[in-house]
Image (cartoon, rainbow, N blue to C red; front, side):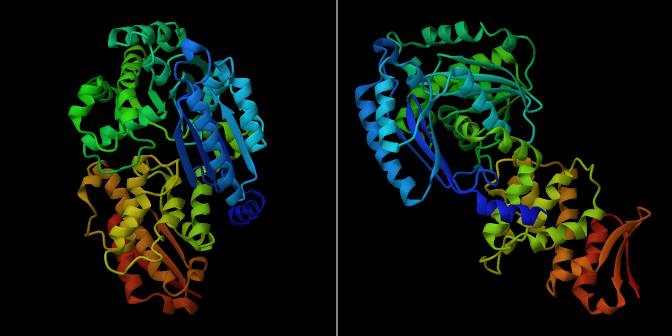
Length: 501
């Protein structure tokens, strides 16, 4: 069913895009197939500062407006070249507040022949939360989207949005305060945040951070701590650690002393403001963890109710299948492999969640085009960097490990820096899945059709049984027997091959 559905939807769903007219920057993202992959194939921004001095003049910045219109001409050509017919344009804080925004919006609509949807603050908060929900397995906490002109917050429990608010605390707005200093900015931040009663009521489990300033801050933390995964999405750190780090970046002078790689001049100016806001939020909410989300208001603005219902059900498997289609496997082999192996693994193992078994069966086969030598290491790195939002960093390392051991014996290990992020029991669970995939690959060397002819199961919690019809006995080579024995040893079981008529 999953193959037929995905193939059908591939024909029905074309590329779609969104253009975000933000207070600090404008950005266009293009998606190949939003239902199956929420990772854009095109992502470009331009710093236009439409909201520069908005509080003083009440109007959009003239130079920023002219620059934005020229950028939109380029975006129009890109949409035409890529044959993107379905797209949306959204406007946020600066567009909804400026007294002259109607004239600017009219010019935008004339260029792109599309209506601009100006989001209210509440809509922006809700769409940011929706964008985070589609990028995580389960959202529990407060989603905080920091933009140039405003700060949006939403309380989410078990993927349900309960509270929403928008505050005039954007980094560009605060940076342009007439008498800008740390104490004044912090007093403004505290004034608005302390007014939100639901924010102060109880301990928050997680803070989900969206927005370029915070992505830069958290990317800096990855760099400074030598964290092995250079992946921002679902990057997680204890709130106390985030508070200490944000205090280290509370001024431009301190930021420059840290010698951060890849931090632009414009971001350098805004990071201290982002640090002030984050520090205040941590003190008020008392969260356990801070998590980064690369999906937010733009993705949330594209997700309608029908899309959201589909993504809530099986977005991880859809993304995996979409990648399989892209890679050329067409979904058939990895699903056969999954059906072959699923009976020997419990569906309540916290060390390797059952929901990861199907992705493991697919991603572990992504070795097309890779050289014979060091294949396991190459596949490991390709898998941990898979373009799938729903995977946490813990998920990625587990899938990378099982893929590594699918291509080599469990006596070998990849980079130990990654293994330090897992417990011993989690590593043991990965060894078992990896050994199972390696055993199964020795059968598919002849043909994957035998996944449907041969059965494997555990009998009496003691013996791993491979049940083989006698007419297919030639499939059971020395390599198959050797890898079956290795799998049984990893599972602490005896092993037996039973031939049937």
